[in-house]
Length: 269
Image (cartoon, rainbow, N blue to C red):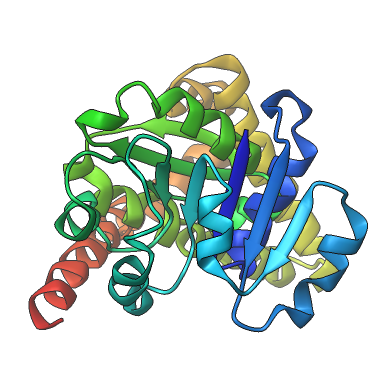
C-alpha cells in the first residue's frame, strides 16, 4: 500500500508517525507534501520508505490512499488542481479537514470516488485520539482500511456523517473541556494543601484511572460512582454540592452551545 499525506503539518505528521509505527499496515511508500519541505528533511533521511515533496501531483499519482490534512480554506483550490491526477479506480480519499463534508469533495471530483471524512483530535499526538469517521457509498468497502490507518492515532468509531458536527464538539472540543475539569481539580487540590506539580499529577492520574475503569470494565459511570460513595460520606456530600452548583448541567449546556456556535459559523461562512 502506498499512502500520501497532502499537508504534512502537525496532524499530518502525527498520522505519518502512526502509520510508520504500525507494521501490520504494510505500507511500502509514504509521501509527505508541504510547500516548504525543509522542516520535513529528517523524515526522508530517517526512513527508507518516506518521500518528501512539494509536488502534490507526484505524491498523488504514486499513491493508493490520499489523506488530505490541509487547512479548510485551501481545499477547494487544491482539489481543482489535483483533479487531473486523482483517479476513482485508483484512489481512496481520507479527509481530516474540519468542517468539510463529503459533498464538498464530490462537488469537484464527482461521486465515483471513495471518500471518507474523519475527525481526529489533538490527542493524536500521543496516539490517544477518539477519531470518528464516515464515508460515502463508494467508501463502504474502504471503511475498514480507513479504520486501520486512523487507529494508529487511537480509537476509531464509524458514525453517520450527519453526526460529525456533534462528534467535533464531543471529541475535538471535548479535549479542552476535560482539560478544564482537570485544571479545576488541580486548583482544588492546591487549595487543600498540595504543591502545584503534585496536585496536577494527582488530578491527571485520577482522571486516567476513572476513564480506565470504564474502558476496561465496560460499566456505567453511575455504577462506579456507587462503588465510591457511602451513606453520609464525604464523596456523596461533594457530588451533591457540585450538582447543586450545576456541574452536569453546565457540561451539557457547554456541549450544546459549542454545537450551536458551529451552526452560526456555517451560516456566516
